[in-house]
Image (cartoon, rainbow, N blue to C red; front, side, top):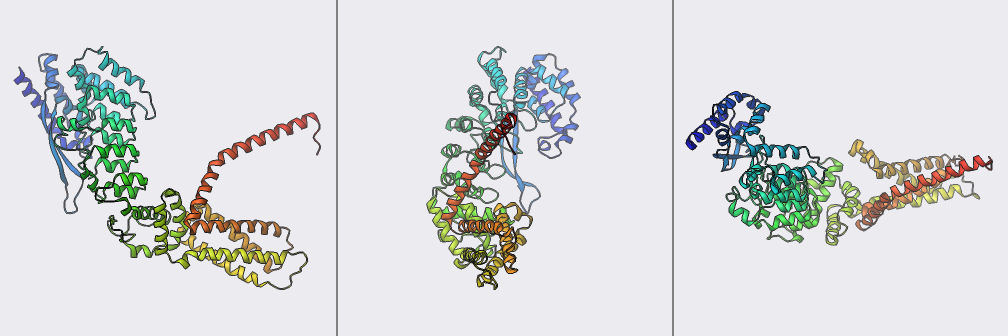
Length: 571
């Protein structure tokens, strides 16, 4: 009888493979291939078996399956993707059918015949409908308790394990794999792993070739959940395919290790440390398709300095990479604000020499907008590294190397000249005892300084285009220049009797002096740190100020209505 069941299972499996092979499932047009499967013949083959017990045995008959995994992208000189790895796993007819996304009548028949698939599908459907923000998972916990603890469904230990090992759909999701993509509570994961530890090592579709912990990282699961899903030494010693491949240290089809993915998806520091502690040091030296080690990706992604330090290979010291951290912060800011290309200097490969170039293509960088480095990046950098004194020192020294001091200070000099000339000019024309009949020399100095500021702003508009309008500092500069030019014209034409002139002159004076702070912020890192912190505090106080104003207006309106009602208000 066992021989007959095995033969029928192979026959049904071959029929499924003939119309839609496992490689067809990985193709983009898989839906078309699913349509070719003759599901009526599949059902008739099962119906020809004498009883339901034999039908169930056929569906759950263990079969050998060879899994072939290819790289995500083909090489430049090849039209097909390179072989990544291959391994053998246990397969069943029910999973062969599920990979080909059978229609509803077939699923109903499978649910009727296989008790393990019935409860696995029930849990799968419940988990699939859980919202990402649901922290309770009450219904899931209830079914897990009934299935695994109270065992009211009457399944044996072996059958309960099988519930958690069944692979659903063309992605071959186990229940743990699906849970990992739903930001689950730790209690649910603990129950699943306690009942079926094997599910921690089940790999999904060869198209992705991930184990559950990588999905937990990718979908932002908590540190506790990710830690629970990390295979330990006993798992690598006993579970397939962890015995063949170390999924924590080997690269996947994208040439990335789980440490790469922790950086890419912004995992917490505790998660990075937990993965590193469970990985050999070789994992820190693995390079992805962009030729980046995990710590290099951390630098490029702009993660915290602590994560960069945690991912450093044993052969490197943090002092060797600090300049590259600064380099990454600056280049990302320039790229975001000035539309620079994605990389500079070919592969943008990490330079691990203390005396090496700041950029791989330093000559090319020298031709970029030097003004942008001072004006836009120094304030941005002040927010990025306020607690890293050594990084600040590197930034200051690199700014001096990259940007000439005279050029770096030119804006500040022009601002000081503007303040002095505007003050002397307005004092000359607004002094009551003096009736100006000649032009003061300070007015010509004012014209030169405001012309420089105006040309500088026009050059920014030309270089940045419409994005110039999105920067509040630019709008402040433009408003200041406009007011000063208006006052200058009035003083040139001696039209200071205009009623608006004193008010505009006062406003322009305030904005000119405030502009001095802006230029100090853009020139000196120490000022930038202070001013950026001050701006952050003001931004945090905005909701408080708005609420206070609303309450004040409300009380004021109440007193106004009360005074009108009592007849004591007089106009």
